[in-house]
Each structure stands twice: as C-alpha cells, then as structure tokens.
Image 1 (cartoon, rainbow, N blue to C red):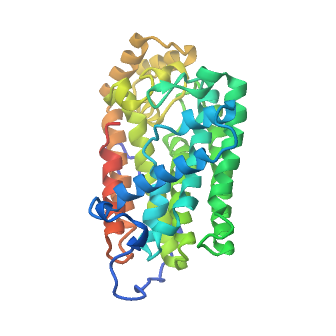
Image 2: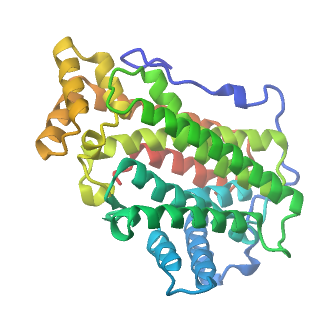
Length: 372
C-alpha cells in the first residue's frame, strides 16, 4: 500500500508459505487449559490472565535468588518491578494458546523473555545515556554504569535459564532448545540493527527504508521472536508458526513507529521517558526521517543543526515537534503504524478462531493507537 508521500509498507509475505494452510486438529475453540487458573480469574480475559501469571512467575523467580540484599538482586528487582506491559511474554503465551497449546504450562518459559527484555533495556539506557526508564530513574543512573552493565549481563543468564524451563518441565527439551535458537537468532539481528542505529546517530539524512530496516531488526524482530517462541513451544505446525511470526513482525513495526511518535503526542509521564530524548541523543527516529524526506531545504538545514548539537532543551524539542508537524511527518508515521497493524491482524486469518487469536488481533490495532 502506498502512502500519501509514496512510502510503501512492505508486506513481508516472504515469511508466509504460499500454499500451506492448516486445518484445526479438532473443533475445540478453547485454547487454554484452565486447570491451574483460579476460577475467579477465568472471566477476566486471556490477556489479563497472562499478565497476572507472568508477573507472579517473575516474583517467584526473583524470590528464589540467592541473596536479596546483594546488589545484583537489588538491581534485578528494581528493573523488573513494577513491571511494564509484559508484552513479549504475553505474546508468547497468546501465540501458544492460539495454536492449541496449554499456556498455563508455558508461563515459566515465557517469563524468560521478560528477563531478556529488561536486560536489553538496561543496556539501551547505557548506550543512549537515558536517565529515565518507565518514568523512573534508570539502573545506570541509579546504581552506576558498570554496575548496571554487569547486572544486565546477569539478567540475560536468568532469562536463558527461565526460557529453557525446569528440568521436569512440560515442554520437551527439543522444543525448548528450538525456542532458545529463535531467541538467539533474534538477539543477533537486534544487535546488528542496534549497531546500525548508532551509525546514523546525528544524521537525519538517512533513507526511510533504512530506518524501517532498523525497526525491523530491533523491536519488530523481537516481537516476531516472542510469537514464534510461543508457537514453537506449543508444537505448532510450520504454517501456523510462520503466520504468528509474520504477525509479530508487523505488530512490532506498528508498535515501534507509534513509540517513536510518543515524545510528540504524549507527556513524559505517559511515555515514561524524557520528551527531548530524541534531540538530546541525536537519534533520528522514523518521524524525523520522514520529515527529512518531505522537508524543503530550509527545514533540512534545521534538522541537521538540531541533530548535530544534541541540544537537550525543551525549546529544541518544541522546534523539532513543530517541524515534524508542518512536514506531515507525524501524520505519515501514524498512517504507517496503522497500516502495519492492519497487516498484523490479517496475518492471523489462517489460525483457528479462538479468544487468543482475537486478543492478538486487538493487540495489533491497540499498538497503532496507544498513547503510552
């Protein structure tokens, strides 16, 4: 689909088999095994259940750390709680349930994705020199860069252990190893994209296509990996696994593009980060690249000046926001987010009709419209 400024939203259809379409193994539409779910929780919806289950599992695992007065344990608890959206483990569980898996048995595995995500946030804040994370002081700002870096490495180890599951876990070892391979591949692509992101720092004269590729390697690739992990852990067919992978990729595109808009459409409290961080970090996000592509020579010079100096003043942020508005970049980015969200929803068409599939579809549209 072409947008008003000629930016085409890739369909990413290369991830979808052209002629392999599954038939549900039976006519059951209830993807959850509720044996371990308290009866009072059954009516709150699959997403709410997943959030509650993952948060409880994170608390359980943190409580089992060797010494909760140790600095490592303190940083782990500070970084994990209160939790964020828990989007990655929730996507893992919903994806597993959407293909008939027992999500109640997969909670410990899914929790591993949140450990890995939190570790990446700690490291991101070090690279970006962001003092705020989720509306609070970042780990590096609070405890020091060296301490945060080392703790982040340790949290990665906790994530790997959780993802591989307990020795007597319900998932066959081969499946958990396959899921770990998905995570390893995802981490490699994320690192490559993050390095590309550092290469363009301070340079708004980067193509929109390159900006989209960075998003695809980072956030979109991570959400793709979360969905694929759920499918793999549930033992889904190749076709359903590919459908969920494509869904996660498109969802991640929508989610990150919307995230790039938040500094200009949301308050610092809602966004959980400083609204001037894009200018201060000299990081040209997708709205900036869209603005540069549409700007006249004067506005292009202004963009170059803004991102050359790393001005962290509110005045610089407002100047950038006004430029993004007058070039139509904010509107264009919002349109791209919506387009990707619709493509994500469409990627679920071949999955059996379940509450979990519907929840995934709703998540896609919410990702493009959220204000925090």
